[in-house]
Image (cartoon, rainbow, N blue to C red):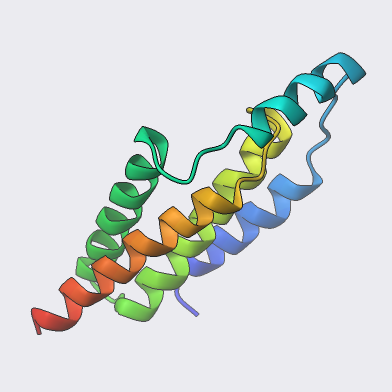
Length: 115
């Protein structure tokens, strides 16, 4: 297992055990915000673009390949959503994960066609 994947996995483990303090008024505003998460918008284009860039960038690193790029990018996207859930907006957005996955697919197609 590459060092990048180990680092990402350990970061995820540490992040999930960090305490989060949320009061009840914050929970109500989170529910409203989470229900208004659109399928298409600037945030989704950013998620797609960053995932695309990460897949291509990680693939170009010495000692790493497309598998490391896909696993690493997916893991970072999920960790980012856990971070948002605990410390950011309070939402774990499955729609952001779909946007990340779209970027990963496009990145994989680009990598596959350039070899």
